[in-house]
Amino acid sequence: MPEPSDQPMRRDHRGLHPEEKLARRDAILDAVARSSERMVAPEPWDALLPDMLRFLGEATKVSRVYVFEVQRHREGEPTVNQRFEWCAEGVHPQIDNPDLQGMPLVSSGFGRWAELLEAGLPVFGDIGEFPESERPLLEGQQILSLLVQPIFTGPRWWGFMGFDACEQLQHWEKVEVDTLRIAAIVLGATIHQHAREAQLRETQKMEALGRMAGGVAHDFNNVLTVVSGAIQLTRMDLAASGGETPMRERNLAMAEQALSRAATLTARLLEFSKRRDGAVRLSSVLEMLRHEEPLLRQAVGGRVRVRITHQAELERLSPVRVEPTQFAQVALNLAVNARDAMPEGGELIFDISTVDAALDPARVDRVPAGRWTLLSVSDNGSGMTPEVRERIFEPFFSTKPEDRGTGLGLSTVYSIVTAAGGHVAVSSAVGKGTEFRLYFPAANA
Ligand SMILES: Nc1ncnc2c1ncn2[C@@H]1O[C@H](COP(=O)(O)OP(=O)(O)OP(=O)(O)O)[C@@H](O)[C@H]1O
Ligand SMILES: [Mg+2]
Image (cartoon, rainbow, N blue to C red; front, side, top):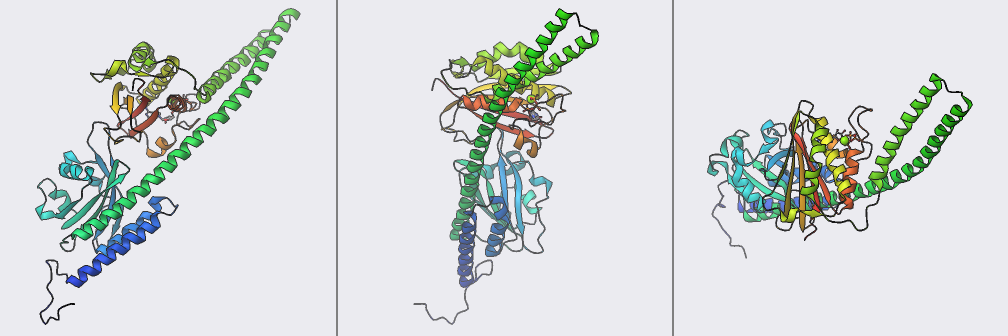
């Protein structure tokens, strides 16, 4: 039974009555429940996010709610990008703040955040009590206190969701911190689910395209055989009847040339679509790469420096189940792309390592647990925009002039690596370069 009291109700340091506090907790719980309901809808999560941030912002009575995505390059420090933001009326938005795009956490003085968030823990408190290295950037945004919760997609640290109080200090109650943690968990689970669905669709699309390309290439090959036969018969006929003229000879040569181009193209299509099951002997990635080194150097030309590096204790030279000729095709396609991305020259590095995806729970790329031989192929060339990166594995997708690119290079890489039970991942930054990471199941595992 509540005690009747004639004393004025106590206020906390924010000036909130206990009852207001309770009301706010309820509002936050309600907002989390409402956004969770929305998030299980089949719509893309990023379309639902603005509403979620608004619900949470209004319930917590903060000035800003935002979502950052973290990017991790292998062995590099995590960098973050602000992706979404909601602002209360009259609050200065930060979504266009260039300091918050591509921000390396550790070297910007936020190493503490990286450690806490990656361990699944929140960051919260009054900015005045934050370490020296963190204060200038936060104070520059007029933040007085904040709460940041990590977002995980499965085992992977995806990013974080934050709440800024700019108008008055906000003391975060445990129940608020915990409830907003649920909001971040729901968001992470939703992103994870959508990413897996998208990956599945992508795999299906590639398989369907592969089958289609294979069928077309096969029929086309038969047509080419007939054309080639007809040209030869015409040649023989002309020779026998003495009807050869320079003009006829030129026309036949032209037809033959076109035929040979068409044959190369169909051969590449067949290569892309070929089903590669059946027993394949073990080959060492390092040995295959060293074997192809002269060819690769020649392909990239004198302006591009080629380096082959590997982990010191590389296990038994990293055997994988890939045909050496197909491996050569993969390495060559990647090298030629790197060359095209570095017209002024640059460096192309092939690095081999063995990784244990169980120990490093798919932090970098979404590969299943187990031992993998990782071949990383990186260049410091032009890089790609996210729009280009989205489409590079599609057959016939090319940004190059028609006579230079058929757009089959990377779809072939993709199909060879996935047929070997592997995975392909890409990171790229415009003006900085590109890294392709090929994960092959380590055959000695
Ligand atoms: N290392 C790279 N740096 C920047 N962009 C790249 C890189 N590799 C591939 N790309 C982009 O991906 C596109 C597709 O590459 P892909 O190898 O499949 O086709 P292509 O090189 O255009 O033609 P092809 O290899 O069939 O001659 C390229 O056109 C280019 O825009
Ligand atoms: Mg290419």
